[in-house]
Length: 185
Image (cartoon, rainbow, N blue to C red; front, side, top):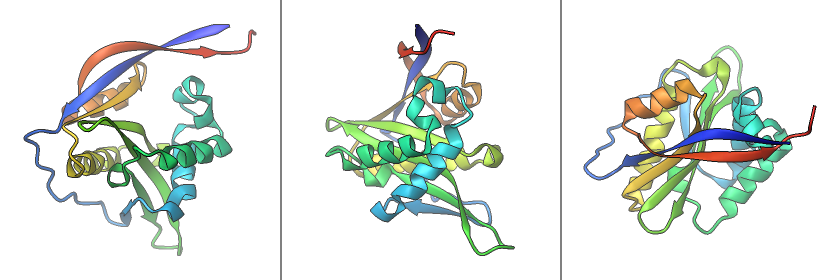
């Protein structure tokens, strides 16, 4: 059985934007892409999406191994943009370890268009401004490599993400439908 998911393609015009230094909340760190962080990105991606609608739209997001393969595939692309790929980690002051709680990846589609592949914040860390911070840092990274416009897609029912994107200046450019084959009940 085929199921159709309505999605918005949204764009952000990078021209004439200046991204100031981004202040992180206490005990959080923004980590630039390094290949050794691939598993940490995959973990944050899995924990961000596993219980969300997008795990139905893109089944690999609901599977830890699927997220690791996705990170491997994205980072191996010739058009991968390390400057637009970030991880947010929370250092627990009472314990001596980091919790990976947010991730974003970017690729280029030609010389001027950046594409955000995935942006996710773990549910228990939402509402702290981390989505805005990681998205703005990704946009700045795209700007650093010469992109003029950045595009992303979002499932229409993801109201909080759409509000975030609109608040930051993204505009809906197109409605698209993602077809997913699901087993019949």
